[in-house]
Length: 49
Image 1 (spheres, one colour):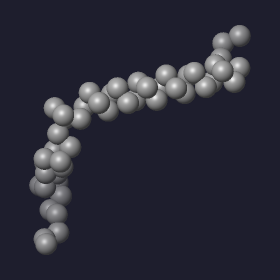
Image 2 (spheres, rainbow, N blue to C red; image 1 turned 180 degrees about the horizontal axis):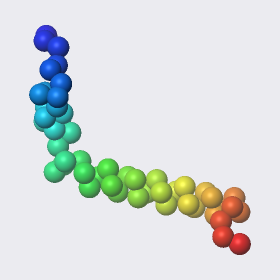
Image 3 (cartoon, rainbow, N blue to C red; image 1 turned 90 degrees about the horizontal axis):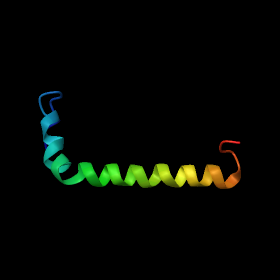
Image 4 (cartoon, one colour; image 1 turned 180 degrees about the vertical axis):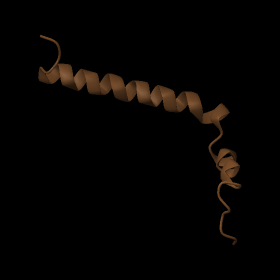
């Protein structure tokens, strides 16, 4: 197996991580994570007062 020739081979990552498939699910996961963090912060009492 040959060693990758960066940056000439950088395009190959998009064959595995296709933005058309994974971009929106990643954004939705980040949204859920952000809402969960805010919920915990406000539940602990560190929110606006």
